[in-house]
Image (cartoon, rainbow, N blue to C red):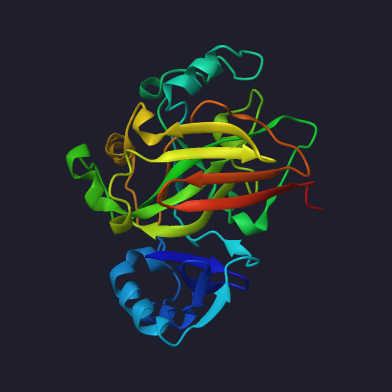
Length: 287
């Protein structure tokens, strides 16, 4: 099942080139009062929601996918966990460019660990990317994003797939500089997620997915998730050994080689096998 958010916070089921508006299915999540839970309600109640979506789909209004403004398919992640330099060739290119990649932060992932991105940096592809610092270099980084489905605390790698709700395409946008990695990657809009959320049952082997990124039609990044240094189960084990993961938390698994700068007017097209493609337009800073 492919689920999306679009327009004015509408909820959709993606089928081929159409989006069925199944916003009414969200009533199955019930009503919640303050203090609200620190996780995403839709992901936490995914089984119930899926049944409601299937029931609503038969009478749902269908919108052409083309032209819809797609929002982040996950509305309220408690945290965005990200893996630095998790492809060997990206590690090699970063090591070879000390003028771009800070030596203090280019170390093996097993040594430097994971990092967090602000949840306020999350947007969908239809919202585009507003460059925060147009006079500084901002790079694209395409990644497989894993969405956690249930509470995960000190989960062994052998059980990790039991805790995954699904997958999406992620863009981990990065301002280059000497500041801490999490700061430079947490500007508003610098975590792009989309184009939709694909439930885990639709991806037979997330450890063998082709991914690529184009800028204005030119291929910049192309790899396969089998090239990850720490694979998905290892990343979940690593992350959950330090903090509890909750439903809707997003795990960005790392980017391959080929990262490069974008500027105002560029169009980024990111594709991952089994998920789809998303187009993100780069614009000048928001007022």
